[in-house]
Image (tube, rainbow over all chains, first blue to last red; front, side, top):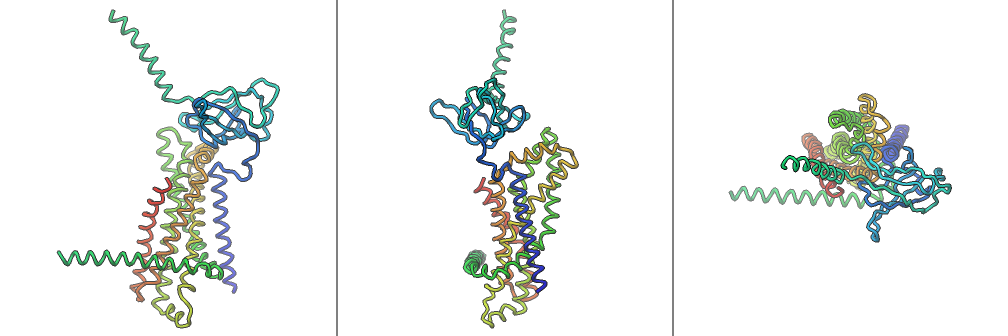
Length: 163
Length: 256
């Protein structure tokens, strides 16, 4: 009887360990959080090009994460990307002419939305649109622009020397 | 030539029949499962045997697999100057592939062999026949609880292996080679999603069913001699390992 009790205790401990490990994984390894989702208010912003922005990417202001990207849609009317942002409820005094831009963390890192405060007196409210936006820098566009400039710059002295 | 073709035909037919027998055995186990869950004490005993007793080996191996991942990953990533994504890469590798697969291989070696040799010895010493004499169905009384114990223990062991593995990566990455702990964890968090963990645990559960099934089948149907028990144990490890790796490929291809 005593041995059975020890075995039951050991099994209980083992299963507890398993659940603790599961909880650790969900909480520490993923960006998922229990209970917090759904709190806060939503803003929407339209971008010409969101690059590699993903749902769950941070929204930061002055480097502090104040919210996350909740949903990304495609607006079929003006062919732009419609991004819904969920801002944490304690940041309720953001001026309603603040702008949003898409930046990249590090050289090859993931993309996030950076907001810069405006000068308006009234704060953003739920479901407000962000008017001023700046798209993601797509590396290929940048390179091709640079190459075109570079080629133009080079061809001029070549023409001169041929004369 | 004709004899060779005959042999080939015979062995093909025989392997097909074995597959059928295993599947029927599996259906039998499933059919008895609800009633075995009512006598949960027997199952608890087997969870202890398959799970709690495998904890030490799972945790040690998880720690060292994680630490090796940390070292190798750091060595590779520091060449391209992006050491911070070590956490993300190692955590993804652990949750999706290494965790379930290595756990299943260790599980087959630690718990599968114990199951197979125990059942094989029961068969060799006529304990199973004695049960049948007393109108106790040995499948229901002995095999099903062992099978269920393995099936329940495997996802738990997988979760523990992955967690300890991530801790091992952290130990080497942050503690030894000095990656910034903030970027280590935040990169990991932004890369790993809940689906990845679900995939890892689902794989763990599938491997648990496969390994337990193979172990109890081999043990229950072993030749009732000393040699037969040994052969059943060997076959359990070999078949479980091969089946685990094949299933892993199939599951990865499906869920990619």
